[in-house]
Image (cartoon, rainbow, N blue to C red; front, side):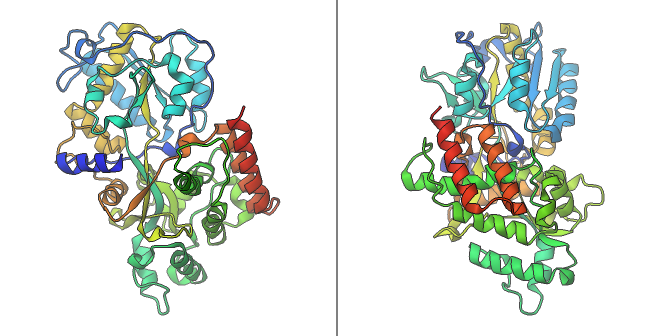
Length: 472
């Protein structure tokens, strides 16, 4: 997928920025109940917009309306402004409701049962589709699907229909403040002379521990921002960080899912997790009250040099009052864990963000919802918002050479994607058993950080809960 998408980016000049909180979305691993049949297919050519506006097609959805259930609280205001702009331009009512952090699945299950249910919602890949397939309309005839650089990215059913369309590519790793790193490299006895030398866990560990011992010289409170372990804010560890050792296990076994996880590289997870915990601005015993926002604020205020997060965090950095980190100093480093050959490892790159149209909605509302999304990714106003405000790296051919990202973290993601010497870590966390599994994992990590649970106990819990849920 990476090669096909990057070739598309390079050949057609696609480059857009990205923010999501992929990291912040639930896995849509609940059940919807019922075994109702699929709704009518909706053809973009007949029922959605044409050109660069939702106006002008045979059926623009003017008699219908849009209800989008979003999962990104950090960009709720942007979505609502876009909805208002679109309604003003087309006359089509657009309602945006945003679920609170880590409640998307629960909110969707509640809202989908209402008389006025969401017409546009999210699934997080094949697992999400299996849970929501009775509510997903076939989008194979839409222009949104036609615009995909890599149509293999779409979620397809056994019948060949297209039921989920990815709309953003994202990446995550260790975000670092290059100004602080340059200051460190200038110190006598520094363990590295530049970031180019930090390409494996051993070198990262040596540099980080030396920086922590010299934090006063560097004017920081710690190397890493707080390892947020407040329930609901632990997704960076029980999902994103866990993805790395599990992806390597999948790679070894030649699989993309398993009913039995060996957690072969659990010690590698522990390597980097301990490095975060022991070289932070916050003591282990206080992490249960720390949020992701706390971590990003610490980074934005220059109190720390590094923080694990994704490119969607740019908004959380730049919008912090008193932010002192210059955009040109915000860079990405891969998450090294001590794996052989990790010198060639890139960022964790992928997507779990797929638009789905509610097949139970009226044909008019389905058409209106498709038209709204196609307007977003084809009109001048929509694409400008995608690039500059929503911050998406969108996998569509509608973006031109002059529509490149202005977001420094999105630029970094593209830089790694375009580097053939770096191998991206795929997003395999979409195969994790459930949100409950991840919550239990996160709770165990908090107990480990506070000293009330051993690492062996954490490792066994992960394996046992995985097997129990996969074999239910």
